[in-house]
Length: 483
Image (cartoon, rainbow, N blue to C red; front, side, top):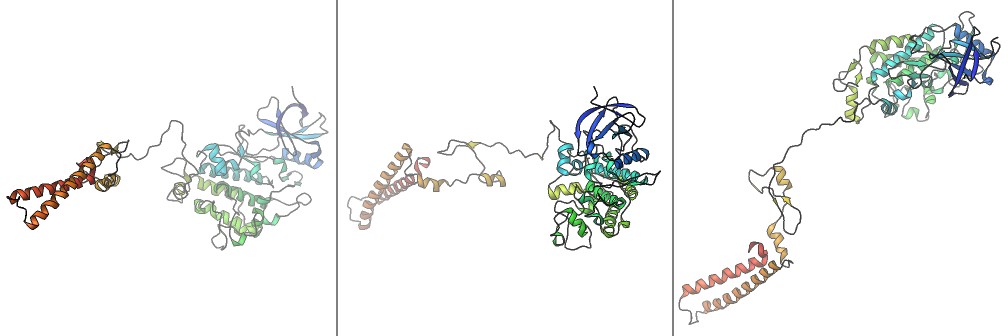
């Protein structure tokens, strides 16, 4: 059952079904039996005679939509006027093309790197961003050709699809010119960070301002953000803007940080290198933000953006290392690969799927070698060649440097019972040898011992006791391992 019944200009009855989409001006309704259109019904307090006449004029003066395909409309322009009664005495809203907001989303989800990577990985490439900027210029050019102005051109009333198609919404706030009567219905709103300096602080509710040059300024900002990862062209740092924290205040000052001749100001640290943008596009930015800052007539028109973006778009190059890296024909190297090397960031990474693996440079095999267990240790260590051609530099570095003798000097009091026994025996031998050598030495010196008949035997005995002395000392120092 319909939740609301309305009538169009021809008095045809239309059933509407409520959705959960609403805003400050009204609510969006589904049209029963019509899958290509929807309806906007205003809150009663927002309905005025001027608004009624404006919507009537819009229905009678539509722009030539650059994308007239029923599946996609570039401009969400009113198609029919709606009334609460068949006599058409009470205006309530209008019908417009249905835009799938699950597919078409606000621009920041595409040109902001974190939002874009989260939603699409690297598959929404710089080529997509470039094409979306072109499509945006195309839609604005179509509106200007009919004498209309967007007025409040900003990123929230621009929707983009994953295929880079663009749709402009909230068209009832546009500046509209009635071709029959010559009457102009002006825009009554404005967003500071997209306004030109001459309209900063303007009272749009009570004063009438032609927004043509305002559109040109805002269009250049939107194109810049598409090509620069969402960075605003007036976002900057340096002494010249230290007292201007907001984009609006920076716009008033008029310092374009990418202009080479301006000192004391530079782009933010997170901004992309400006030379990523093709030279012909940079010329248009300079005309808008430098020359056109004080002279609106110098700002590029929408059709100039259309022509320049089309010419550069067909020349974009694809990186041979990453199919998601697209860049201008004026560059010899892929800037996205260079950014990955210099900053460690890949703004358009290759996809990585479950099951896919990463291959590194293969490690070199080391030949298996015998193992030894060092005394007093429970785990085995690899025995490395100590010297000779079999020892590599790596083995020499890894080989445990065990000083055997210096280590064994400290094992006199070892807890091993056999080592202790050997050391005691060594001590006894040494003491006995010392005693006998002392005895034979005194006799030999004085040559008074009558018992010494054969000095050859005497010398042999002395040498034996010397050997016992050396052996005992060695056992004491080294323990049972070398005994």
